Length: 346
Image 1 (cartoon, rainbow, N blue to C red):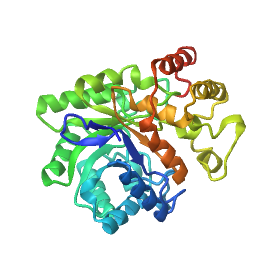
Image 2: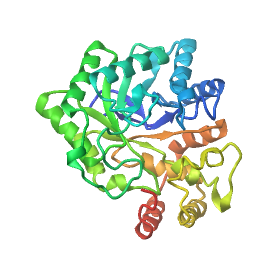
Image 3: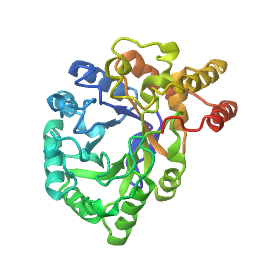
Image 4: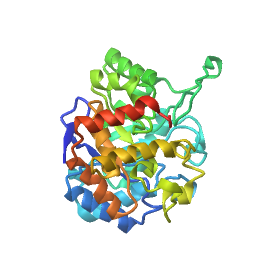
């Protein structure tokens, strides 16, 4: 396994992070336990979860993934071996504290205390804001429309003051963002410097061969400010594993079960682009999924690539990507495809 520092902390996190959002929906608690056991045995010390998981999120299963991890902590008694990341949901989920603005002191306090209880732990290593409160572009939205008169969100400085309180209490160690824009990350970093408040150590955004938009503005910020990317969906929801090629729709796959919910990578023209990437992996005798993950892992602005799996076979394949080498010719051919078909799934 490979490791990198989380932000400018002294924490070493594995460059492969174990994603957990299928546990409690597509995976049972026992399967989640098996995945965590195997990941830890193979050098992964970084787990990512969120209060709203499993996904697709719904009232009946809200918090179940955190509960599964908490039960594993109780059983294994090895909390100190894991760097645990969780997230507070942004606005819009009516069954989560009423669905309104979530980053008030009251709601952050409630969210942290409830997550700690479900996770059966005294602290969370990295606590992230899952998506912004303000009306901006995230989750693949295009066409930003600025409506200042109708804007309403919790002041960034007040959010940092609230989070600092929990850091001082020892209930969270560090903080990060998720699904943020260059302006959002840079503003939080600016305020932290001016006020000596806690710094956002990471940002968890999408990054993969079908969506490299992070490189446009955020990559520079990540490197210069040491606030690295935790890249989610490095396999583009499974599309970059090749399992959906030729209109294949495996049983119990995310697209088979929840295609109406996960639409970002199911655009008609994308299949031709995936085929070009697949042919590169075939030409160089690489596993397609491993090539896709490794491309993410080697980027200098990335701290860790978050993998997710519903089977142990998938998990083992994904973790083995750390042993793959992408030589200059592979990278060149990947970039040639990107030049022609730039970011088809923003």
